[in-house]
Length: 254
Image (cartoon, rainbow, N blue to C red; front, side, top):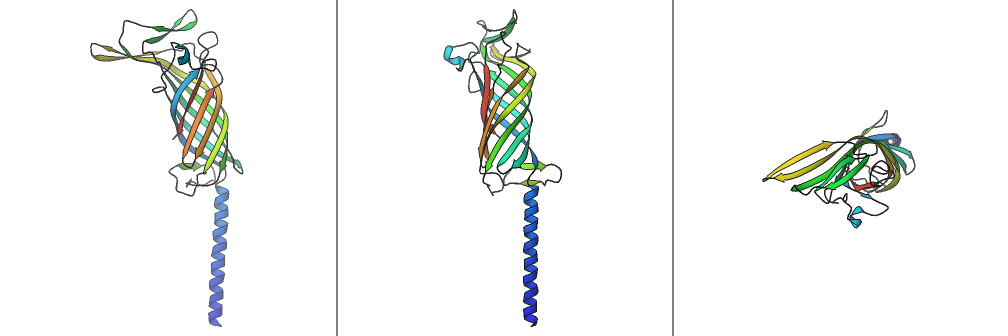
């Protein structure tokens, strides 16, 4: 009788512990919903299109080199779980376009309310590029499917009662959304070689660049790897002040 009573107590204790674990897991699952914040870096390349074509196709003076025209964005992204597989990625970022010209002798200047791309012939130019910096805000609805139970290296800080956790990345995710930004700086940088010495020159200026940008963003990922494509719907330069160029960028999310 004592043995049966002891066995019954053990079974009751096991059942209670199992129930407590299930409740804890349910609470943990509920807490995993909400808004999580993490820091990302977009790293890739940028270029632009003119009437749907690359300027390189027409030997335009503002043609850029794909390699060396780097796009960088520092992003503070919030991941809000809407319901089911639907999430919303939103938040601010600071980004830089770097347009490295195919022709190192190209220089930018403002003449008669126009931005002019002229070529110098009396210098040994090694580099010529235009850099534009923006502060942006984006919102991208994402669909996330499946879970990867392997431990992830990404760390998330969650708001309010939501818990701090690591891992549990989705196996596959894809989404599309929009962004808008405001120009906070722009400059040209040139490098020339003079008697064996390299000399760098940086000139700050607006160059009739649009103060605002807006466009669409597509992002997709599998396990720990995400890629992105951004396309500006408005032109890089002010209308009738420069060539009608729509900038775009693509790369990986780190």
